[in-house]
Length: 240
Image (cartoon, helix red, strand yellow):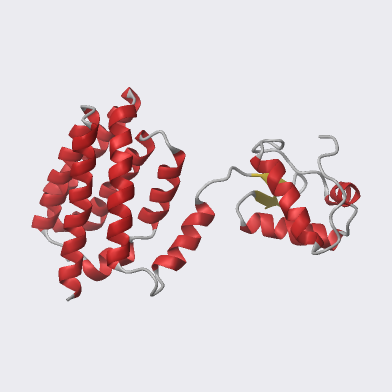
């Protein structure tokens, strides 16, 4: 792999080690799946101690940038900069008293309507097939009634996430993936399960997906915005 790193700065050394390795990963100098140099080699390149290198690797693992594997083929392996850590941090934020239903509605209405707009302009044949399949699944669950409430909610989230992917912008995919991975406690607390709610939600999803599939960008954005705001209002009423 050659010499990737320079001598670490001596002021807060481990932070400099973290910054150097992180930059090499994010800049693509170390591809995903690559094993980092052994600890001894990193120590030599960075002119620092094994304890400092281990502390830096621990922080990089917490950030989700590397995976520490044990055994004969063990070591520190580069991972993609995905949304796992974002989801974990957002989970704590959403469960705190700092985020209200109003905050969540405002954010989702803006972000999800924008994702729907872009999805309508950029969706691929594969994306259309995925949306159509998810809609069939959601419709079947809705027809089975309240016994399938939890599964229906998951199908609803899958459709929102498929629309985010269809936007062809990974930021929408990551951010909305984190939101939907952590939104359940709001639903559990404030969204009253009911057959009418399931039917209305399903009809909304069908209309949004139809606009996306037919490349009606403005309509898709308006429908998504209205959908998010309407169901947020239901939760606010339940809270009262």
